[in-house]
Image (cartoon, protein in one colour):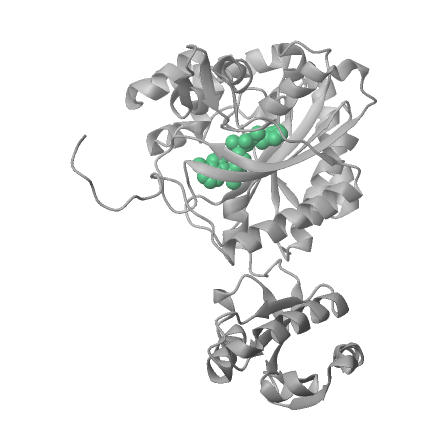
Length: 435
Ligand code: HAM
């Protein structure tokens, strides 16, 4: 055994979520559940690790994700497993396994959970990060794309985002995609000597992936490159135009850009991203698109599909509003240890009478001044508390209250204080709510 080393720390690129941050994430997830379920989407939970082959066959061998960002390890029997770098592949694998061809269509699913990518950590970029995602399977028309985007913007609107704009592109498919790739190669090849090894490999193996390059030289070369939108076949063009029409009708704001090709190989036709100016270099809050060939390539019946995933860490960082609902808060404070039993009984009574409120009993029983100081801090330093208070009241229970079966309630915001019989609690709390 080596020498005992220093303090244990969370692995590089991970971050702990403690209250109130964890509560903010939970509130965002609760909003996702509320909004998505109102469109008929049900939650899916797939394993955190999958066979390595799944990602190689879906996300694509030549993508950055599969090529150099996966957490891959052999299990004790030597099977190659990978911590999921994204969830679309796992969702499709699960549906094919469960017999997607028998299921009534369309299939509407959402998920929330950790994803893992071995990237260089920086603000907004982690090795374990959280995504909230949506997948709609079985709809090939632009109405499917529109539903997903409209629902996405409804969700973002609920969280207080008002001026986000989607960047939209359409990636050619089939022969048109091959022609686009060739045109891209022809444009880049004469300038390839300015590129690094990695980008030269991309150029030959999968030219679309040049758009994932972080090299400014590559970005410069791509500036005058052929545009995806000039290579669409007739059906693809009609799909793209119809989607834009539907988005305009629904009031979803978007701009077109040929430069959004997305770093995963399964995309066909529609792709989109949303960025926030409130974030730094890692400003993509979310990305998504259509993947009409993926179900079939993973062994299912041909099934068109579209979805997106939001980077929850970035979403929360970009949020101005607090997604937590404000709740009435009661600090129940015994005057001394002798009053703890009475305090526990009164706490229970308040929870029953005022559902949805937060009732904290001061179990330290160090007296009114200390208890009141903690209650005051809930108003003055709300960032220290798991909950978001709509009102803060201290319930003071000393020997007088205990012996007389009474309660004294002090409103911390106004300083007003009232004393009344315990039996009148319901009436008093109701009255306080109405005030
Ligand atoms: P993606 O663009 O790879 O797409 O990831 C979606 C979002 O996850 C990004 O826009 C970003 O906000 C967040 N994200 C990605 N990597 C990191 C990281 N290292 N740290 C923090 N946040 C990160 C997908 O994953 C697709 N599965 C989306 C999809 C669903 N397409 C169709 N259906």
